[in-house]
Amino acid sequence: MRKKIVAGNWKMNTTFAEGEALVNAIIAKKGEVKSDVTLVVAPPFTHLTCLAEELEKAGIGLSAQNCAEHESGAYTGEVSAKMLASVDVKYCILGHSERREYYGETSATLTKKIALALKYNLTPIFCVGERLDERESNRHFDVISAQLEVLTQLSAEDFARVVVAYEPVWAIGTGKTATSAQAQEVHAFIRKALAAKFGAAAEQTPILYGGSCKPSNAAELFAQPDVDGGLIGGASLAADDFIAIAKAF
Image (cartoon, rainbow, N blue to C red):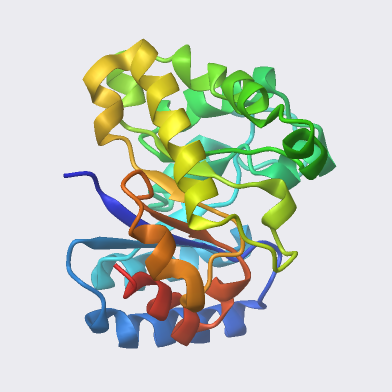
C-alpha cells in the first residue's frame, strides 16, 4: 500500500504569528483525518525552528520549501540541507515550477540538491510538470520525462526515499485544474517511466497532484489509481480547506 500524503506548500506567505495560528488550527483538526494519511506542512524558513516540536508531537511532517545546492560555505542567503536536518525538518520540496521559472533551477542544480537532501535524511518531494504551451503542443510527456532524469540517476536505495509531485504549471494559482483523467494519465506515465529504471519499486512511490487541488475536487483526484495525495498551495493556507482535502481520501 502506497503512502497517502497531503502536503501544504505555504510559499512566501504568513508572518510567524500567522503561521503559528495556522499550525495550531491544523493540529486541532488533525483528528478528523484518517490515520493512514500523512500530513506535511512547508512553511517559510523563518518558521521552521519554532514549529518543529509541536508538529512532531502532533505527528505532522515538517518540510522546507527548498534547500541549497551546496553543503556549506560562502553562499549568502542560502540554507543547506544540513542546516534543515539540524532543526528536525523531515521533508524538502525540490524542483517546484516557481523555482525552475523564477530562479533558473536546472536538472543539474536539482541533482546536487536532491543528493544533499538525501545525505541528511530529508525526504525530497520532487516536482515535475509542464507549462501550458508545452501541453498545447503535445510535448508534456517529453518535458516530464526529461525532468525525471534527475531521479533515474539515483540508486535504488535512494529512489525508495523520494516522493514525486506532478504539478501542471498551467494549473498553479490559476484556478484551473487538470481533470481527474488528465491527472491520472500523467501520474501513470510518471510511474511507468520510473518503473523502467527501478522496476516494482516504482509501485511504492507516492505521486502527489499539485495544481489547484481544493476541497471540491480532491476526492475525485484522489480516487484515481495513481494519485496518492496532493501538494497543496493556496488551499493549505486555510486550516479548514487543508483538512477537508486530507479528509477526501
